[in-house]
Length: 127
Image (tube, rainbow, N blue to C red):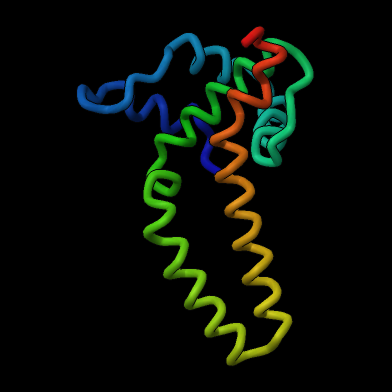
């Protein structure tokens, strides 16, 4: 996964791009790598963060991910790759088919978790 800071600062100069909160970017970049990784992992599995600051960062990170092309065009590329993977899995080996289905399930879970990050962390954020 690409670090948020690299992509966000690359879009900073563009006029028509999504307006990212500069305070969020500065706060995200100030975190150490381990802490960022922990927040990303908890968001991806759909879990609540430990404190209010992490919850705010998690909601911002999930909102950023929802603007990415892989998320916005999910239903265009996912079925195509799923069908191709199932066909390849059936042709090669049942274990490959199982791996394709596991990756597909993980993609669906991560997409759902990014959508639900606001709701999951709502208790900490007072919503």
